[in-house]
Amino acid sequence: MGSSTATKVLVFQKVGIFIDAENIELSGLKHHEGRSDYKKILEQVGDREILRILYYKPEYKEISNDFQTFWAGLGGEIRRPNKNADTFLVIDAVTMAEKMDVAIILGGDKDFLPLIWYLRSRGCRTEIWSWPETTSEEVKKAADFYFPLTKDYIVKEESKKKSSNRRRGTKKKSSAPKKEGAKEGTEKS
Image (cartoon, rainbow, N blue to C red; front, side, top):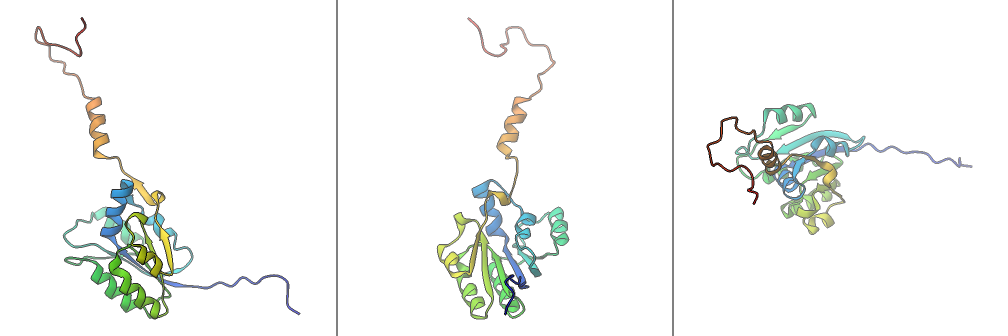
């Protein structure tokens, strides 16, 4: 009869990744006080084949040259719509629906519900990866899988407040002679 050892079946999935940059970045800053660590986030895709990584950010928002270089190194593409990026994200995902097994959407806007429903109707698995604090419960339930981003996916940045306090604490003392009668520190009685 059959062998008693289990056979490991590998399933290769073709993945499209669609990033609502405004949603992910602003939520990361607001709730976790740092930048989203895209490299670490994308590592969670695992061994699945990435067809495309699309990053959507309106053209009026600045993207540094360093980030563009970093993003190109990941094999990603940057889309710069003149206003709301959601429309571009939806069009690209719908266009790719027949070519991918899985659509990973980084963003939790309720606006993506019709896209999730459409992709699922086309046999495409939908995964929502986003910050729980800003993700619609309806979106979490509609997707095949929800991956909550946590503080582990944040690059902590020194806040301006802390650095300005530190600068004040290390302020150099003036070497100019004091005028007679000037106070230094607190007076003792």
